[in-house]
Image 1 (tube, rainbow, N blue to C red):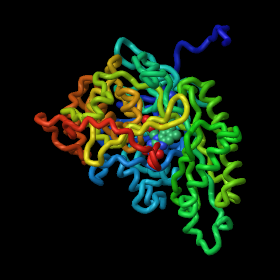
Image 2: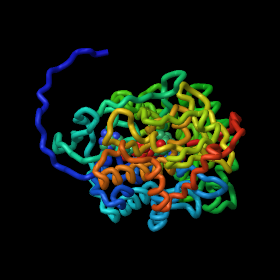
Image 3: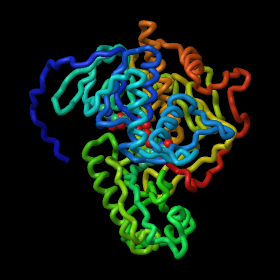
Image 4: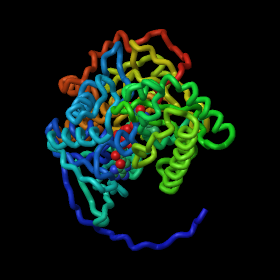
Length: 467
Ligand SMILES: Cc1cc2nc3c(=O)[nH]c(=O)nc-3n(C[C@H](O)[C@H](O)[C@H](O)COP(=O)(O)OP(=O)(O)OC[C@H]3O[C@@H](n4cnc5c(N)ncnc54)[C@H](O)[C@@H]3O)c2cc1C
């Protein structure tokens, strides 16, 4: 390792180029929920995003589809998430009544909703430093093509996925699995477009994906054999695919890059190269050995590798796998989650999937969004205060968007009340969310568990639903 250093002469003073009631850093599912909610609650909102578009992993990571988060068939994410999905339909960007979406439509729909809510968008800026004073963020240093500038607000939301803002402000965090210390692996997503010329005799274009599905046994056999003889160097146990909005397009969530940290620049760079190396190998083998892929073309490669897990910012509350198993509810619960524990092995092959019955949920209390160490910051992102197992469940996009909605609502309430978000009452946040149309049922202190006594530890099969 190179330990040498260079004395640098970075400026001691920087221009303040933006001021707002609320700054949300990161425009993924969490940031979209946070910015829209805060603006609708009357706060001036600046949303700062590193890319030139919104969506985070939904667009820059091209992950797909939105995973289900339902109880008895009802979406637990009525609110900004469902609005976002609905708006994608305007762009023909959703397949039927499913949750398969087009990332281009996701970008447009998110931007529409933000602009309509009055959110100011600042693209191509990355938060690189935070000035703090005791337990307060005083300003965020941004880097862009124009150099370094400062943006200031009364209250802040960290929606960076990785908890960048909180970490830069000195908040305590956890990282990865409690056992190995490694986070879930990264995956570079890509899409192939099937060619009707590869259909068996008599098949129509519509049958392309079903033909592929009916031949998945062969796909897995070919993949495993190529893994065994070293032609595919990917540790994932099988080929995980999803249908695209277009029936000819197949989405691959298959590459697996382990032991690289998404919060270390050089490791992230190496992971991109490793992900594309695996992609080349997978595509070459499938084209050569599975007839339905013979003439398939590369449709898209995600602009960046997908980072499933990194920091988890420690908050006033902390939800664990025991809470998940018990289906625990909280008086200040601001999100209900039914999506199961879904841990892609941080150290190699395999996926742990912990069954969650269809009629129960666990809740995330407001305290998981309030960092212990800074008072004018809320977390509106996947990186909340939960353990490794619960993170693997709550991280999927619908609940993350709802967590963002809660964080944005809370910071707007803080601005309106002239206090910090740490002083906002979680019970009030829950009430406000219900008024916004979030489907959170009344809390029953006599029954704090949704599945009393169930305590199921059944290991399920990831099947086709792993994220
Ligand atoms: C490979 C993979 C597959 C997945 N599959 C699914 C799936 O099928 N279905 C599902 O529902 N979920 C899936 N997920 C989970 C889900 O995509 C993420 O957990 C979710 O997007 C997290 O949302 P977020 O808003 O917290 O963060 P992100 O989506 O990561 O968004 C963070 C945003 O912040 C920006 N940003 C980061 N740092 C800074 C900074 N310092 N300054 C400025 N901007 C910054 C980023 O550019 C990005 O736009 C998958 C995740 C991965 C990695």
